[in-house]
Image (cartoon, rainbow, N blue to C red; front, side):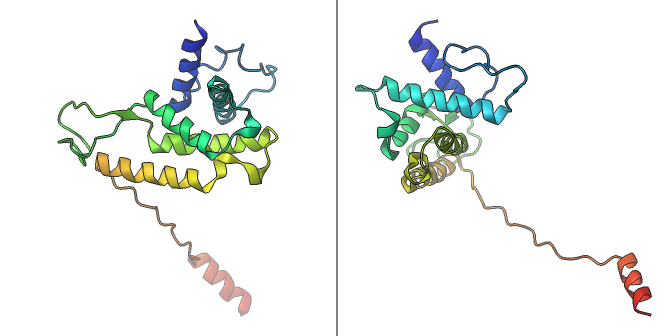
Length: 188
Protein backbone atom coordinates (compact mmCIF):
# COMPACT_ATOMS: atom_id res chain seq x y z
CA UNK A 1 0.00 0.00 0.00
CA UNK A 2 1.45 3.41 -0.87
CA UNK A 3 2.09 6.02 1.80
CA UNK A 4 -0.63 8.31 0.42
CA UNK A 5 -3.21 5.50 0.31
CA UNK A 6 -2.17 4.49 3.80
CA UNK A 7 -2.61 8.07 5.09
CA UNK A 8 -6.08 8.32 3.52
CA UNK A 9 -7.06 4.98 5.07
CA UNK A 10 -6.07 6.25 8.52
CA UNK A 11 -7.99 9.48 7.99
CA UNK A 12 -11.11 7.60 6.90
CA UNK A 13 -10.87 5.54 10.08
CA UNK A 14 -10.39 8.73 12.07
CA UNK A 15 -13.76 10.07 10.99
CA UNK A 16 -15.51 6.74 11.37
CA UNK A 17 -14.44 5.98 14.93
CA UNK A 18 -13.57 2.46 13.84
CA UNK A 19 -11.33 0.21 15.87
CA UNK A 20 -11.06 -2.57 13.33
CA UNK A 21 -7.51 -1.84 12.12
CA UNK A 22 -5.62 -1.67 15.43
CA UNK A 23 -2.74 -3.87 14.31
CA UNK A 24 -2.72 -3.12 10.58
CA UNK A 25 -0.61 0.01 10.78
CA UNK A 26 2.21 -1.15 13.02
CA UNK A 27 4.83 0.90 11.22
CA UNK A 28 3.04 4.13 12.25
CA UNK A 29 1.97 3.07 15.73
CA UNK A 30 3.98 1.82 18.66
CA UNK A 31 3.10 -1.73 19.54
CA UNK A 32 1.79 -2.28 23.04
CA UNK A 33 2.86 -5.33 25.01
CA UNK A 34 0.18 -8.02 24.90
CA UNK A 35 -0.50 -7.51 28.61
CA UNK A 36 -1.36 -3.81 28.17
CA UNK A 37 -4.52 -4.13 26.07
CA UNK A 38 -5.85 -0.67 25.23
CA UNK A 39 -9.53 0.17 25.49
CA UNK A 40 -11.36 1.08 22.31
CA UNK A 41 -11.27 4.74 23.38
CA UNK A 42 -7.51 4.67 24.06
CA UNK A 43 -6.83 2.91 20.75
CA UNK A 44 -8.95 5.43 18.86
CA UNK A 45 -7.31 8.34 20.68
CA UNK A 46 -3.85 7.04 19.72
CA UNK A 47 -4.90 6.62 16.07
CA UNK A 48 -6.44 10.09 16.01
CA UNK A 49 -3.30 11.62 17.51
CA UNK A 50 -1.04 9.85 15.02
CA UNK A 51 -3.27 10.87 12.12
CA UNK A 52 -3.31 14.51 13.20
CA UNK A 53 0.49 14.41 13.48
CA UNK A 54 0.68 12.94 9.97
CA UNK A 55 -1.62 15.70 8.70
CA UNK A 56 0.71 18.34 10.16
CA UNK A 57 3.79 16.64 8.64
CA UNK A 58 2.09 16.52 5.21
CA UNK A 59 1.50 20.29 5.12
CA UNK A 60 3.77 22.36 2.92
CA UNK A 61 5.84 23.41 4.73
CA UNK A 62 5.39 20.82 7.49
CA UNK A 63 4.01 22.18 10.76
CA UNK A 64 5.67 21.33 14.05
CA UNK A 65 3.27 20.40 16.85
CA UNK A 66 4.74 23.23 18.94
CA UNK A 67 3.67 25.66 16.17
CA UNK A 68 0.16 24.20 15.85
CA UNK A 69 -2.73 26.52 16.70
CA UNK A 70 -6.52 26.43 16.49
CA UNK A 71 -6.44 27.50 12.82
CA UNK A 72 -4.54 24.31 11.95
CA UNK A 73 -7.15 22.32 13.88
CA UNK A 74 -9.99 24.04 11.97
CA UNK A 75 -8.22 23.32 8.66
CA UNK A 76 -7.87 19.68 9.71
CA UNK A 77 -11.59 19.42 10.52
CA UNK A 78 -12.50 20.93 7.13
CA UNK A 79 -10.05 18.57 5.43
CA UNK A 80 -11.76 15.58 7.05
CA UNK A 81 -15.08 16.44 5.37
CA UNK A 82 -13.89 14.78 2.16
CA UNK A 83 -13.96 11.46 4.04
CA UNK A 84 -17.38 12.02 5.62
CA UNK A 85 -20.48 9.89 5.14
CA UNK A 86 -23.20 12.25 6.33
CA UNK A 87 -25.27 13.82 3.55
CA UNK A 88 -25.69 17.54 4.24
CA UNK A 89 -28.30 19.15 2.00
CA UNK A 90 -27.58 22.60 0.62
CA UNK A 91 -30.05 25.48 1.04
CA UNK A 92 -31.39 25.17 -2.56
CA UNK A 93 -31.82 21.37 -2.47
CA UNK A 94 -35.41 20.05 -2.61
CA UNK A 95 -34.51 17.79 0.32
CA UNK A 96 -33.16 20.60 2.53
CA UNK A 97 -34.70 20.22 5.98
CA UNK A 98 -36.05 16.72 5.36
CA UNK A 99 -34.94 14.04 7.79
CA UNK A 100 -35.61 11.23 5.30
CA UNK A 101 -35.29 12.41 1.68
CA UNK A 102 -37.22 10.43 -0.90
CA UNK A 103 -34.44 10.31 -3.48
CA UNK A 104 -30.79 10.98 -4.29
CA UNK A 105 -29.28 14.43 -4.70
CA UNK A 106 -25.88 15.95 -5.47
CA UNK A 107 -25.36 17.55 -2.06
CA UNK A 108 -22.00 16.87 -0.39
CA UNK A 109 -21.24 14.32 2.27
CA UNK A 110 -19.40 15.58 5.31
CA UNK A 111 -18.24 14.47 8.70
CA UNK A 112 -21.12 14.35 11.15
CA UNK A 113 -20.82 16.95 13.89
CA UNK A 114 -20.99 14.24 16.58
CA UNK A 115 -17.97 12.49 15.08
CA UNK A 116 -16.04 15.77 14.97
CA UNK A 117 -17.04 16.60 18.54
CA UNK A 118 -15.83 13.21 19.79
CA UNK A 119 -12.64 13.55 17.73
CA UNK A 120 -11.85 16.93 19.28
CA UNK A 121 -12.41 15.47 22.74
CA UNK A 122 -9.93 12.67 22.07
CA UNK A 123 -7.36 15.01 20.50
CA UNK A 124 -7.72 17.49 23.34
CA UNK A 125 -6.90 14.73 25.84
CA UNK A 126 -4.08 13.32 23.68
CA UNK A 127 -2.44 16.74 23.34
CA UNK A 128 -2.02 17.04 27.09
CA UNK A 129 -1.03 13.38 27.51
CA UNK A 130 1.74 13.98 24.98
CA UNK A 131 3.25 16.88 26.91
CA UNK A 132 1.16 19.81 25.70
CA UNK A 133 0.27 22.49 28.21
CA UNK A 134 -3.44 22.81 29.00
CA UNK A 135 -3.42 26.60 28.51
CA UNK A 136 -1.83 26.17 25.05
CA UNK A 137 -4.11 23.32 23.89
CA UNK A 138 -5.31 24.26 20.37
CA UNK A 139 -8.14 21.71 20.62
CA UNK A 140 -9.55 23.52 23.67
CA UNK A 141 -9.68 26.92 21.98
CA UNK A 142 -13.06 28.68 22.00
CA UNK A 143 -12.97 28.97 18.19
CA UNK A 144 -13.17 25.16 17.99
CA UNK A 145 -16.30 25.10 20.19
CA UNK A 146 -17.89 27.84 18.04
CA UNK A 147 -17.05 25.93 14.84
CA UNK A 148 -18.53 22.69 16.20
CA UNK A 149 -21.70 24.48 17.34
CA UNK A 150 -22.08 26.04 13.85
CA UNK A 151 -21.61 22.62 12.23
CA UNK A 152 -24.16 21.08 14.58
CA UNK A 153 -26.74 23.79 13.87
CA UNK A 154 -26.21 23.82 10.11
CA UNK A 155 -26.36 20.03 9.84
CA UNK A 156 -29.48 19.94 11.98
CA UNK A 157 -31.24 22.47 9.70
CA UNK A 158 -30.01 20.79 6.51
CA UNK A 159 -31.16 17.37 7.65
CA UNK A 160 -34.35 18.46 9.40
CA UNK A 161 -33.21 17.15 12.77
CA UNK A 162 -33.67 19.08 15.97
CA UNK A 163 -31.07 18.55 18.64
CA UNK A 164 -32.47 19.29 22.07
CA UNK A 165 -30.57 19.27 25.29
CA UNK A 166 -31.66 16.47 27.54
CA UNK A 167 -33.00 17.75 30.81
CA UNK A 168 -31.63 16.13 33.90
CA UNK A 169 -34.21 14.44 36.03
CA UNK A 170 -34.43 15.75 39.54
CA UNK A 171 -33.81 13.04 42.06
CA UNK A 172 -36.22 13.36 44.93
CA UNK A 173 -36.07 11.23 48.03
CA UNK A 174 -38.79 8.61 47.99
CA UNK A 175 -40.09 7.34 51.28
CA UNK A 176 -41.09 3.74 51.31
CA UNK A 177 -43.45 2.26 53.83
CA UNK A 178 -40.49 0.52 55.47
CA UNK A 179 -38.58 3.77 55.97
CA UNK A 180 -41.54 5.56 57.48
CA UNK A 181 -42.43 2.61 59.73
CA UNK A 182 -38.80 2.30 60.86
CA UNK A 183 -38.77 5.95 61.71
CA UNK A 184 -41.97 5.62 63.67
CA UNK A 185 -40.74 2.60 65.56
CA UNK A 186 -37.51 4.37 66.52
CA UNK A 187 -39.33 7.45 67.77
CA UNK A 188 -41.84 5.59 70.02
